[in-house]
Length: 466
Image (cartoon, rainbow, N blue to C red):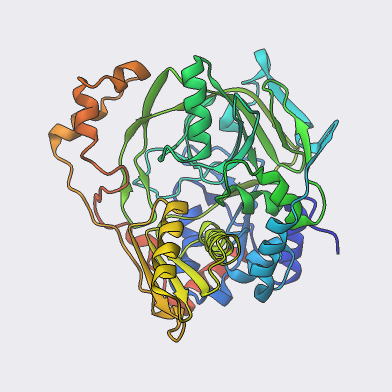
């Protein structure tokens, strides 16, 4: 059976299975869209969760958008995720194992539907630049701006040409500029950025939105630095991923994409980025981070904007699913620790490895390998194979109170890299004591949690009926 050729085929497959809700009622992307989808994660069991397609989207200015928005279409539930992989839910682990064991190199094609409409040079802003797209606000009233929550960033190592595909949030800053969160130096895009910084050149980058679901699956996964995510995506599909060359940067992007945004990430200056509602239920701190300047925007004439709903779980846990499967393969097969039976991750910070009668040395080795591969881990623990994984409790991160003095370190101005790297710089000294993800401002808005159980289902159904 052929794999989904693009996002549209995937949505069609979800609709045939009764897993797609079309919302024809007008919905405000800045105040209603993400909170509406979040209702099902707060009030419905996993097997009742669905993907959403909003067909009548406006913003708080009253602007109407011609492009629909889909949310929760990649991993709103394990069943949705299995359809994205083109397998049964019980075959997810085997599907990933096969994809990693039998990768398929991508192929280059001459043209693609995503370049049906191109805005470049003097025509970059003819349709408003990035303002042409209905980018939702994830946490209304708290996020500082709309964020691209499902951008598949494509970059290359400037020395070796090794490609990386990764998902890193992008704050919408202007019609021609976004932010980018590179939180850890171990991230492959951060390594590309640092090499470009040392060479004194900007990092060429492209953002892919939408496309066949295997692209999103590999984009949020962690593979070794020398692995091309497009190869693994080919392994998932059972056929090569078709790539097309960009117009303004030396990169190749998925031909199946809905939108492509080309440009450069500055390596000489930083700008303030965030706050943004993060997965523990806390607001991520504003910090000085790289920014992306747009050089070209391309899209299908009838593009579909895709957005992930992440933040506090339960949510669209595509990242968790793929990380668990990657770590299981890394421990059991690549590291030959046969006692490993399962890996579970909660809220990214708690990692549990289930093992069956392991040697003591195997336990320590498994935990060491797993935490090195998952650097976000705060707590790692072994679990006996006789105990069910359901005993994992929800793990929340501690909060940090930010003093007015430390707030001063986030002055809203652009800074040079050399200024920030100076050891005498008080800005850097003040910032190092503040975890980049750990400020809690207050409880999240009540409207995110208002509906429970059947009332959530009834509210969603009433909107779907229009």
